[in-house]
Image (cartoon, rainbow, N blue to C red; front, top):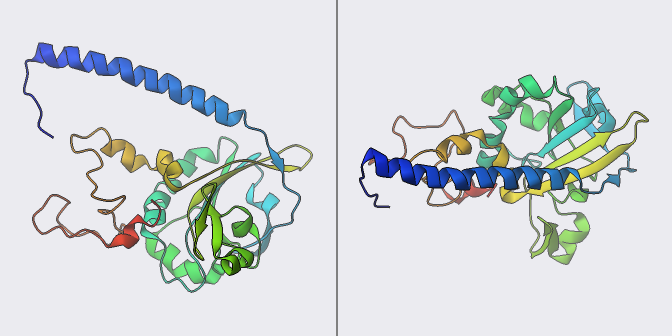
Length: 250
């Protein structure tokens, strides 16, 4: 994009005009968040089983004494050797946020369908500390539409992001939110998929302030696991973009 070079006075006039749009966006975002919080809830009656470092866990256990639970559906299926690069990019933001969330009545937990032992080497490699459990053997991933059910695979159609898709599908990303009341009842309050997770990618918010923005040829095409970046940044002559797998969470 070509930019006009102007005087400080002209820049200030343009900046103030944009500021009015930014303030309107902030008001719209607040209204959207209020609308999200006002959505109806669904009672969870199924007994989901998870596996963690000390064995069997229930959905109630994932709350860790809090009333609010945010689950990240991390794409790590049975037999995988490493996590989806896009999921890993997002998960790099969890530990910093968790220093505060766990003190404000929120439990943040990642859930994957692979057996618990299978993603421990990758977890250690990434240096993550946030809770990450397995839903292997449970209907959890199927019920929240981040892994096609056996019936969907047999039919060749599966639901993701509130739409039906052709094919067998695979592991997909998303967030699901739950609330537990004083009586111990659990409710599903919200789920978002695909680019719905953008809001929680802090690095994108930094990039959106920059002159080049996100500077992507495809969603997350520049991004790598954080231990696999080259010395040269994107924009250097020898930069080579990732293959399409980098867009797995797009």
